[in-house]
Length: 88
Image (cartoon, rainbow, N blue to C red):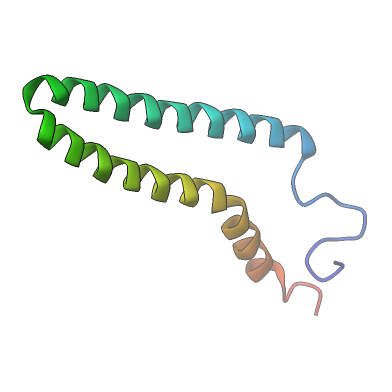
């Protein structure tokens, strides 16, 4: 890995990973919580439309969750692309 990072250097500070995990957990829970609040609020107005909205929101939540979960992959790829030619 000498071309990307000097030997013996960490790509990510291990202690910083703790904050990333906590931020992901809080963000994911806020998204789910807001979706449930919206569904419960809409259910009082029109139950059929609320169910259709719940199905749509569930799909959106899955897509956002997949995007958030893949951020480390994209970050690593961009880091590698940005530093791949440094050692040459």
